[in-house]
Length: 438
Image 1 (cartoon, rainbow, N blue to C red):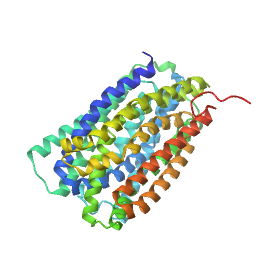
Image 2 (cartoon, rainbow, N blue to C red):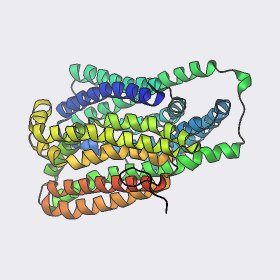
Image 3 (cartoon, rainbow, N blue to C red):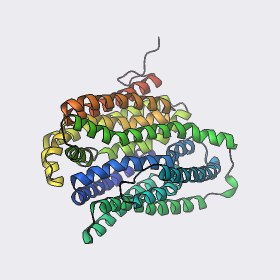
């Protein structure tokens, strides 16, 4: 088994176990927080993820691309530069958060401890991002897989231990839910830093050399900046989306509390179930970024096209049966695990959203590996604008059905834009055959 398939298999197996844990975590949160509390929790998460993206500056992607493309003797010099870069990023973000807390009411309506949780997560994410990028780039996917599983396992253990023996008011319960997530990140931080130190210790000191600082800066920022903007835009749209959806539902005739409950069923139940198989797409994406980067640096275009064919068939092979199961047995699934019938209806209507997201994630890895990050950002902007317009106009008229039409439309548009751009870059037809030269 070659390194590409071995990496995917390792990540898929551990990610599957992690998704099972995530599924149980969401079941516990749905039970402990209720539909209204779950809606509030899901409304906070996008803002938290935005802080996480800013803290990481997408170093896992830019560093994995660098380490996959460059010889080993240049790795240690880049690692030193990356740690200095992460330190500067951490100091700047901590200063910004102090100003934000002083001048804005961010998180003021929730438990006061949430503010300090966000401050704590900044240095943790900044430095673990370097180790993630390093292990991804040198194709040590076992370390990444173990870290991902450990994060979910620790969070589940903490949630069960705390909620099983103690009871809290709603705001405190939401704080604890966020606290367990960040505590698990602390454990992952310790694990990855230890694994990194052990790995580096085995390298010969006399075999290293460094690129000029300007070249290292360019190697990091040329990927990190556009990718970070892509992730920031993605996070911003997900931070805005809950409020847009609830606004559209209120305009359609729902009460504010009812709209929050329906959003909780959509985000906390339907999307949780629907994205369960996405661990396969995420695993492929993680392995594809360094793989495609390495092949692009050596101009191995036939090899990239071959990987694209394999990924598309694999995704279609699991994606279509998955959405069929949702459509055929959605009622039984939501009733069995979440005791919610309405969310089953939403799950069935969202089948295009899930299928095209499964396709889009590995395609995004191809975009990054081929150096098309700016194109990926533009695709996301266009698809999000289209989706938001549909959510607002359709949702305010037809309620949640209209909202779901907008979500489905945005996913389809984003995937098609990625696909056609990659085909054009590889000079291939839409059937993934080399285009004939005229």
